[in-house]
Structure formats: C-alpha cells, structure tokens
Length: 387
Image (cartoon, rainbow, N blue to C red; front, side, top):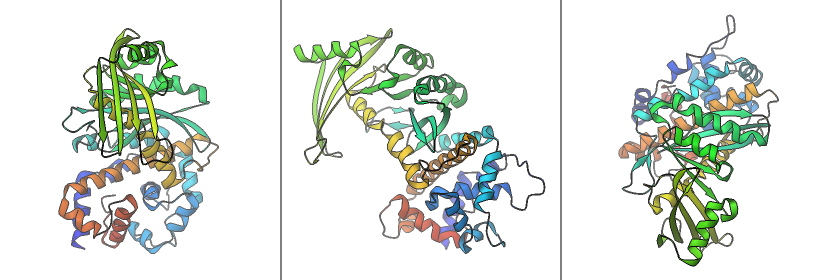
C-alpha cells in the first residue's frame, strides 16, 4: 500500500491530467455523467487493452473500475454514451489535449535522444502516413526517450499523403516551438526538392532511407563511385545488440541545392532464417552525423510503424475501430495517442527510482503488460488518483 501511495504522489506531481481534461467543453445540459469521467474512461482503454467501446462498457461495470470514479451506478457509462460523446467533442480541443503534455515531457527531458552512446542529443521527428478504421492520416512522432505522436492530419486518399505531410512540416515550428524536430526521418516518398526545402526552411535537417540507388540520380552517382573507387569513408563492425555485421560506404554530394551525406548500408543477420541480408541507401543534409548515427537513425525510422501505429492497433484495435464519420474516430485516436505517450512517460519516470521500480515489478519481467498489471492491482489504493 505504501508503495502504491508513493507512485500516486510521484505521478500526481509530474502530470496535471485533471486540469488538462477540464479544458474540454461539455455541450450537454445537466449531464448525469461528468465529461471528465467519460474522457478518463476512454483514456484508460489502451491500459486495459480494451479493443472496442463495447468492451469498455463491460469493464465500466466492474467494481474496480467504478471504484476509480467513486461511481455508485451500475456502470460508469455505456458504449452508446461513449460513442455519442465522441461524436460531439470539439476536435480542436481533443487535438490540444494530445499537445498538452508537450511541456511536461520536455521538463522531464523525454523528447531528446542520443543516436549513439556519447553522441549529441537531438530532437528527432518521424513522419509517416497510415490507414486506420477506414481513414487515412499522417502522424508526426517525436522520438526521444519515449515515442510521442504529437500531431496528426487526415487526408482523403492515399495520393494525398505528401501534400498533407508538407503542411505538418510547415506548421511544426509554429505549433511545437522549441520542441520542433531538428532531424526529420522520412521514407522515399519524401525524396524530392520541395520536401528538402520545407525541412531546411524550418532550420532542421532531413534524413531519408530508400532501398534502391536507382530512386534518384544522386544515389546512382554515389553507387558508381562506390563500385569503381570506393567511398570517402568505409567502415565495418559487428552489432552485438542486433546480432548482425554491417558495412557502410559514405560520400558527400548535393541535392536540391543542399550539401548532403550519402551512405550505402549493408547488414547481415546470420541467425535469421529469412531476410538475412539487408541493404539500403540513406541521404541526409546533416553533415555532422557520424556513419554510426546515420545507421541508427535509419533503424529508428521504423519506430512510428512498429511502436506507434502497430502498437496502438494491438492495444486498442484502431485498425478495426470503424467510424464512418471521421470526427469520433480522430477524437478517439488523439485520446489513445495521448494515453500511450503518457503511460510510456510514467514507466520511464518510475525506472528512475530503481528501488521503487524494483518493488513495483516484484520479480516479473519489465514488459508493458506486466508493469500495468501491477499498477492495476494498486487501484484499491487509488494509484491512478493523479488522473
């Protein structure tokens, strides 16, 4: 019990969830269920791995869940109530809810990362498009010590991704201020002059990873150089973390009027049965990046796919969460993104106190589900009192 109270005090001190949720306008007259209660219930869906509003309905009838809100009704709220509220919530306010953790995360130094040990701390942004619940969207993830999908924009069809992404890049400095990425990790779709200009106009750098050299002439020139003369810099090492050997060839050139580094990366994974041999081409305007940092940045590019899109789909089934109307879908998605980022921040902060974190784990492995199964046990002591 003492451990749970310590955790609750720690988290309440770090995050002001109640005050953030109170900024959302309730359009109802004399509601029987507080809007804050509904929002917190939706907020906790990824924590409970609830994959539908109907499953949230079932959970809201349990004694533990009702106890969280001091609810004396037979349920906290029904699935129809959740769906109805999501339909009229102000989209700008819910998007602002997602953004509202920005300064708290920045204060806790969660939004910067080193690409290699001892390297420079950088603000890394990963931009990508996806399709969820019948809707297309682009998301910007700030990848620091946690992954924080901070901005999203919908678009009508697959071909609109690039134009929508450019709007995010152009708006990012105004919206994110000093937390705006200084290194953008993008895929081959963004390998064009306009995107390079958009990023450099933000006083940031761009790094793009593609599979084949024929994608652009500047890569073909580098490939010819490597084949006949070798790179300006060549390096081979073994990665004990990923259990692979790797080789890099590097040179410099220019693209879209900007000086760039060009890298050819080859990796070999001897223990894999498939995809043992991987290679890619990487181009970046950041001339200060070492080849080791460039390689790590190329791997980091997958964070938005694996640890944002796939993860939120796994925890809350957003791929199957179908809303014909985009308004309730994006309201719910913003709440989910905020929840997962906050829970990651909680885990990171708890890890700082080794004694407290060890007592929380109580001998189990520190996985997402294990950690929050332990936190869930603390409900009777109001461990989530900070919400």
